[in-house]
Image (cartoon, rainbow, N blue to C red; front, side, top):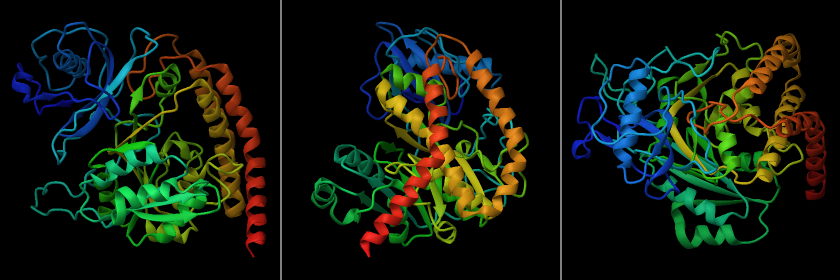
Length: 486
């Protein structure tokens, strides 16, 4: 949903001030529970859950809920639109709380808004205590001219690397969204990782031709594939995303523009929201944060560690996710890229993105999170998928930490010094998760309105115990493949 610049009465008249559009993968908005992304000036500012009654106008109902949420949050934009209202909503966009608990909360919606988001600030604040906000300059370099009349530089030349394996249908959907980006200078590189068939290559040749570069990487593993893409690109900034996302049209511009404004920036990450919420597994994952990191921009600076983060920079999961990240190409190459013994497709099960974040920060470069760089992710749909994901996250966490300490043993004293306070904080967060409420549907990021099953927590812990073993197994497997290749 795109909310207009002011919340005055009659804001939906003629559809000029509020626009409701289905999210990717969703049909027209109808009666029932609807998970809504709220934007202002094209900029994501929060999410809410609304119920549209039978026979009501969805746009009027959901706009009224969004306006009411802003008023309750003390926002300056007051006034609900006329028409029918109803259902449950959030306390404010970006900090929602669920109402009733349907098994199928419904499709997501999205307002795409203007081509150029405005420069209004996000009043929601940092998503969690300890995060730092970016106070060093405009969050959106490359926007309109400032008071001095100077227009900041536009986005640098970029490349997008998509690693894939035998998922041509999903890949085509992702590539279509990437080719619709408004970035002025970019290329797309698809890395076909240990393919069993020629389906991906044939898709690229048949449908995309010279618009997409095809690269084959015979060694399995997401980090290996990403390193292959890193070696192939010729751009100042390299972005990475997955084959199961749909990228917002301004995703690449918003993700890469901060590099033009900050020469010390080594990495940027962006917002990941669910493309659909149709199964209990998808609902549970998003209720506990999903892949999103909130709606407030933040810059992490190793020279000024965030307060309240005793494990910084080792608690890398809060920085972002591999489905929405970009690096200054020379910086990522200088640290050696991603550890090839991490990532999906290896015994380590994951952790390649976290490894990249920490290596860049450890070299003294900053990392910036911007919610304006949005991709829609197709969450896994079944409980079995979610169980596999929980175990993999636990394994990837400790696998990446093992990789960091193996490749940068000089970081071991700093890690050990931070560990006691970090473990104490982790126990506090775990206790809070166990105490969180029972019912509800996911409104906003990290609302935690569904209890996290003990089985998933156990699987995560088992994965954490396995992670170092998996990493060492992956290193051994790589050495074996290298010897055989010789």
